[in-house]
Length: 453
Image (cartoon, rainbow, N blue to C red; front, side, top):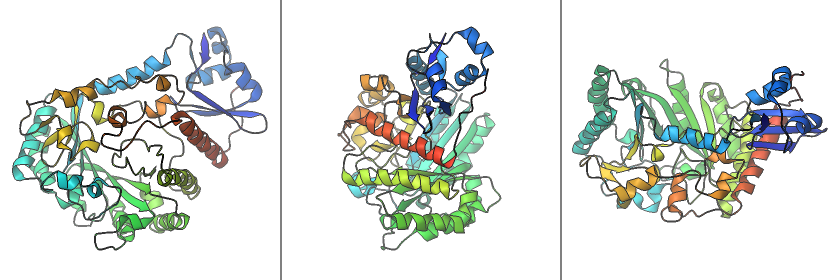
């Protein structure tokens, strides 16, 4: 027997039609009202023999809108997350090369005093060598090692990247262990002299950030940086080597003129055709650091205005042909924070589970200098973390999109980030998703197109 998925989100789509989005498969379909009533209304049961003779039923089942009645969809979701947690094929590391930066973005950890509290901002030679030994040890017996290099501004401190190319990568190749790396940078130092080094460093993916309004990303002399960054990206994307370049646009608050100017700058440099993707993120002023986490719901007016602007700008970007995805993806994987074979390493060699903790030594669970000395009280909560611990998340049809929200926020609340549980989370996220569905259908109209029996 087949029944409607618990993760279907249905909404009216004019002229008697119904749009349905499944938050697990992220498939979108438009049905006539009669079709929706026949196949997907609450309590509908479809027999399997019907599925073999009705192409519409087969299509809905293939896209996840209909599921076997015996399937526990929440358990399936949890199994996917647990597979990510215990995936032992490789080892993933996020390494902060330095706490120094050539910018002073007001929402960044540096402005909060965390850089100062972390001691000297530079990585010592001894720490660099200890990190390489630690990573080589963790990669032993694995299929691959994946590293995300960041900072501060990582291109201010490339000695470890050079040393990795000289020592770590050859050792891994000799043992048949694949190596891949990404770089998160503000783009100011992505000059042509750096381009040849990217392949040497094993970097295949780069994320660069810009801000709207651009006044939030001035350099330390108070000068704008956006044009220089876009020029650097233009030069980089014309290079023959295969480096995937993604752009993250931080929406600090609404500024239509500035966003339009940014889009014009991207199109003028043909970056709309050369970038692998563009991601818009509304800055939450209490929780802005982690690039892997979903934008938060922010309960202050600045964050709410930024989020509303972000929704509007996504639509504008898609209309202009920029590589922006309107509809979200399901979070079926596991971030480094909850992965058994994953770690975040501070520039001083402190081991953490989450990027948000870097600079807070009391949140570290160990050190590359003393790899066997584990502070289990800081490590175990991450390994024991349950994505389904909250009843409101277990019952929510949007759960596959957020997996219960950021684990750091769930574990620590206001302790470090200033975040607290957001009342009305489901309502806010549901409204956001419905807006994205309507926007998608406005740009790409779909008629009811299920195959007939």
